[in-house]
Amino acid sequence: MSDGRMLFERERKDMANIVRLIFTRKLTNVAGGNFSFLAKKEGKQYIIMTPTMMSEAYLGDLSAAQVLVVDLETREVVSGVGNLTREINMHQACYQANPKIKAVLHAHAPNAMFWATSGLPMPNLTEATQKVGPVPVMSFAPNCSEELADITSSYIKENNLPVPHMLLLDSHGVLINATGDTGMTAIHKALAILDTVEWNAEIAYKQTIFQALGIMDNYHSKGDDIADLDDLKANQAIYNKAEIAAGGD
Image 1: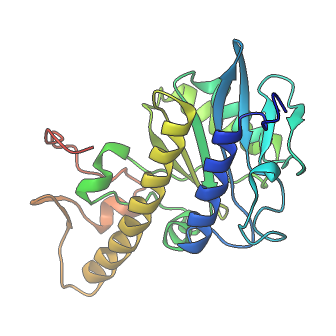
Image 2: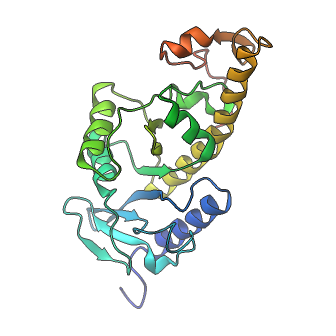
Image 3: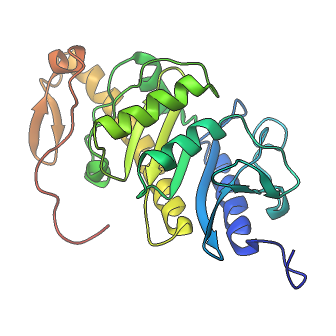
């Protein structure tokens, strides 16, 4: 507390609102999910992060006081009444992998989870999700493990991934890393990506079915046929590489 105010009060209230929205929109489930973004005070970096059991115990209904303020380097909880999730491994690794990353969002959105359990990269077909680019599946590692953190951070660094991007965690969910002028701006960008890519996940699934039924011959995006089922089976990244139109976000 400072002058009777909670540390990073505005940021923690915003995070609590985002948690409720994601849970209400069924973009994660009671099996988990965890969100964080960076905030700075007096030159020091902190992680504003959801506590463990956010979904199972609290059903996504958090107070600002339950949202944690975590030292980015030491993982010390400096404020908040909740406990730190073990998924801090992956969040911290993402922030260290690319300094442009200012928000990390892991969720269990149902249609995206389908692609995460298929072992196949999600075809990225909609105009709203084009900037996200390819959506690959990571090698499997147990949730909350240092191995999972290493796999995701190594992939980000080795492929020099632009930010924002989205990765599928095999059998575990989605991971979205976003940037912005501030951490709060970045977490709102990550939320927008989660919502729009979840729509894309269902569309990609249905286009796959239509091809299997012989109704379509290719994946179709923005007026072009960009790939087919053989490309998907070969684990090729399927997304529209055409120039992104000016305007919009």
